[in-house]
Length: 190
Length: 182
Ligand SMILES: [Zn+2]
Image 1 (cartoon, helix red, strand yellow):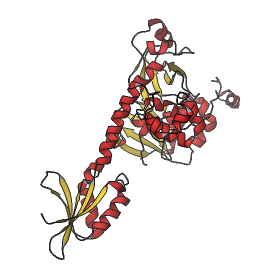
Image 2 (image 1 turned 90 degrees about the horizontal axis):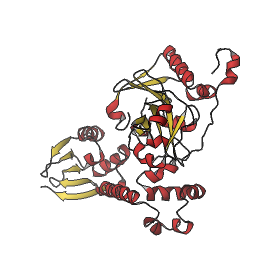
Image 3 (image 1 turned 180 degrees about the vertical axis):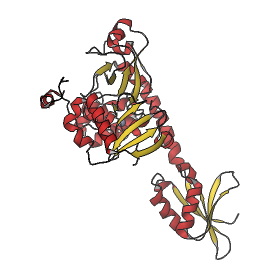
Image 4 (image 1 turned 60 degrees about the vertical axis):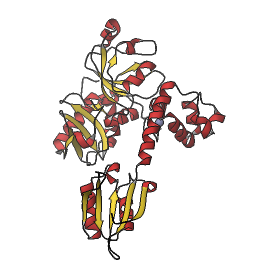
């Protein structure tokens, strides 16, 4: 740097490149050249192949072009190292576990004309049950509380025939709950 | 430093700083990273509020327009976040680790001297101890981490034992993923 602070110093700033076109992986978030270390190699490859074939070829030169057009072959990809496979298996298992989580919104008839809704599993998606119960109460102007079920976990019991409304509200409020993991059921009073 | 960082647990407060403080932070950053002079107004527009995100253990993160830009620890030197370093890759000195070291760096480990002196590694400049450095990797274009030299680069080469670079921030750590709302 310059030893003076005058305008002449301006020309003496060191320079830097400015990169604005770095592609970050849509699966693992890393610059795509680091996907091979992310433990989600197959998914990363699929993502990049769909996004940018040229960059894919540059990033994964060992994966040949016919293979990478075929998902089934890609799964069996022999270019993955043992470690990558292991990490992938682990990630896949976790994803499976996550996908198996269910939010159950059950309509239970109390009498001919009265029913309650039992919401179970919301905590699996990282939702604070007390806050959720409060939200239901204010949104639907009805009683709503957290209660232990016979299995020893917590349910939210909502007093009112609002099963569909809860379904909609859940989707709007907690995007981390996938629609396909919500079950609507009906049941008799226990 | 950010291996287990999560905004939910580690942020203790956020505050919009006074404009005098904002100027001070800006000039300190420019003093450390003079190459940013032409871009600083774009990165930290004077008219936009600078939010200081205070975290555990006297760690401060500088945020402007919801983007995390720089951080410092115990009032020490500022480090850019890796997103900023990727965009402006030449603002700070670099060291390069060999390919074998990548997975250790990505698990948050400090970098041992042999990982900096082997065939795939590179240190092109002489730097004193405590210098903040970008960490590049053999065969890769973009930095994967930021660290602080625990020995001078001369010592790293001659002693070639022990921790050469203390890891500060790496891609995939808590700061990399952190989204903080103002
Ligand atoms: Zn990836």
